[in-house]
Image (cartoon, rainbow, N blue to C red; front, top):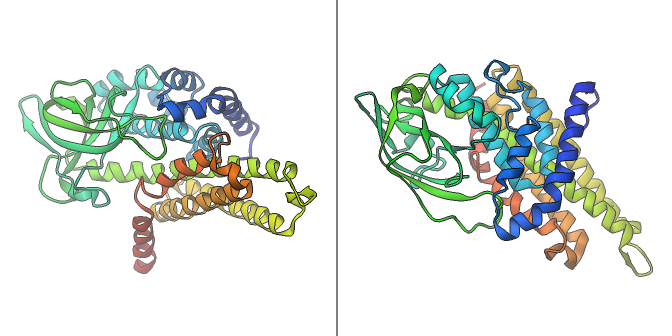
Length: 380
């Protein structure tokens, strides 16, 4: 994940991420996947290294790194375990939101323990009837004395049932995006019920559940920014979230490429290593090229976000779509090079493929990413 203009400080962060991935994630990833283990102790160790507060502002207790630096760190972590690194990105996103838009009282109450990994966070936007159409969400927060009464349901929530702090998008006003607000909700509040843990194709080292809110009281100080700002905050979070998930795709695809490179040098057919066949060489060349293009597109999108550039949303959507699609293809090529061995769980390639498939759906489907890009370029 090195870049030509990398500073020594950046290189040091990446070395730390690589070592953590190699020592604390990769050796256990298959077991976590097979047994659906949410590795809470490992996440605490990641927090001790700063990986749970990468771009939370320094003023709020985080590391305050750039989105570019954070993206490359997430990519390195994903080489060890895609699913666990992806949860880290979600926790980072929620911590960043609290650090930037929570009231001082709420920030002091919820953020310090989140940054140390003593408490974990979930992001609650998607609903059973509002996936891509997030502006039409139906969960309601009715104003009552001293706060809000929350009712509704969220679906596909990462970490749900095992996390402690929820950032929930709920309707406090009229229809449409301007009626949505963001609230911090304690995960064990009275009136919260959790659905069954979903049995998923991938991302098995983090639980996914529905959350039901039945007259859940949320105090006034847990409103983030102002009433009606929730959809705007959610979209700001998702710009970064799209870079984050693209990073996880990139790191995983690099891991698959490196595994394939080693395999084809060792595997022999017809009396020679399969790396000597021109077809194998062409596939590897294409994989390398696609990964380099993806890395540079990721860096460009992250720099647009860091600069608060007017085209940041466009660049993040384009990067998310392109990188998650092409990195999935790279992993599929790596599996093909492994032949039948790529299809069995003794090798990590099939897990890489399963984990990456959802990246083309979450943080906005790739079809929605195309819509965002098309709308922006046609408006110019």
